[in-house]
Amino acid sequence: MAQLWGGRFTKETDKLVYNFNASISFDQKFFLQDVRGSKAHVTMLAKVGILTDEERDKIIACLESIVKDVESGSLVITDEYEDIHSFVEATLIDRIGDTGKKLHTGRSRNDQVALDMRLYCRDELREIRDVLLHLIKTVHGLMKEHVETYMPGFTHLQKAQPVTLAHHLGAYMEMFKRDYDRVNDILKRMNICPLGSGALAGTTYPLDREYVAELLEFDAPSLNSMDGVSDRDYVIEMLSAFATIMMHLSRFSEEIIIWNSNEYQFIELDDAYSTGSSIMPQKKNPDIAELVRGKTGRVYGALTSILTTMKGIPLAYNKDMQEDKELTFDAIDTVKGCIALFDGMIATMSVNKDKMATSAKNGFTNATDAADYLVMHGVPFRDAHGIVGQMVLYCIDKGIALDDMELSEMQKLSPAFSEDIYEAISMKSCVEKRNTIGAPGHDAMMRVIEANDKWLEGK
Ligand code: ARG
Image 1 (cartoon, protein in one colour):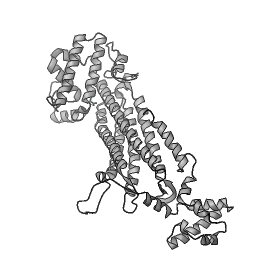
Image 2 (cartoon, rainbow, N blue to C red):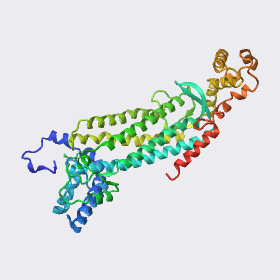
Image 3 (spheres, helix red, strand yellow):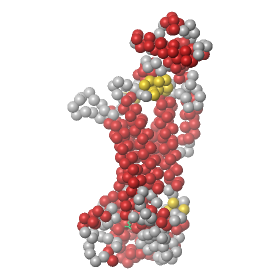
Image 4 (spheres, protein in one colour):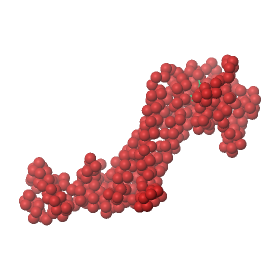
């Protein structure tokens, strides 16, 4: 049991207490960030004259050797240490003796852990922003391909009006762009350096906090040392953004699962992204989409957990805050993995355009357009609605689509119908007439695709 704080104690910590208290099994995840913070700290200590340049160089060289040895496997991070901070400091002291003991001057583990967690989340958020951008580019590519792929649009999971696959995907495009912007907003707001807050009340040393902030590429030092050590708002914001990303991926997954079913066959997932059944030889299951949908719960759980942990903590640091890590790390890995897998899954799926178009045609998705046609020919809308309702009943009875109905039959219901009704309710014209921005018509869609091209420029 290697601890940094044995001095005022006369007894060994109980073994169970030690294990309960220790965090090394999970906080070793930010080993590199811990070292990075320590290097910046000693660089600043030398700048303000608390360490000599030789001491600084000796500590930095040793920290680098520790990283090298951990990476090569010759030095192992073990649970003999309470946390990653103790591991690094104890190893440093083992290797360079008294000089190593100066590392922690003007620093507390409270501001140290606040820094490490922030650095780790910043690094991971940047990676998540990148995988999200890749997914956005995939969706953008699919949209360009499917401007004329007609399909039913749904409300209540009932066929409603015809749209295109580009238009349907465009809805997710908007969600993912918002997700991307949200991640960026968080990155901006969280970019404040807590190091130098000390345990809670700053330090008596003349630390140059602006300089450390600059070394670690933060915009500024935190302005209140109590807040510096106990702020986890950025973790909450991050997990909230993750929960929203997962909610979007989960809705999309749900649609992929439906579209990939035998009943729909709108798409077929690639073999590389499907799994089989151990008993039913015919099965090809959309497990990836189901897992993404399922894992959404874990990420919501992480958000709920940290919100609950934080709500009763008085200022400043309390050990409860050690609980900010495990579920956050899990959520980060989950979100990053889900985005990348989802991206690969939709990039490789094949789209069955005929099935989509036939489904739109057979679902009376052009009924509103038939009513609009009558309105254009002088029939009041409420009457038109009733007439088309009767046409739908007739077609259901005959098992045909609206555009398969004889003109003479239509005219029995309203003399306003003439030959051009067929053109008016064809799938193509139903979609193409909808050309206000945001609608599925070709020209409107191309304007959106152009706007998305612009959005992507320089990213
Ligand atoms: N492992 C601790 C955490 O994650 C580090 C900070 C310990 N500080 C303390 N005062 N015990 O929060």
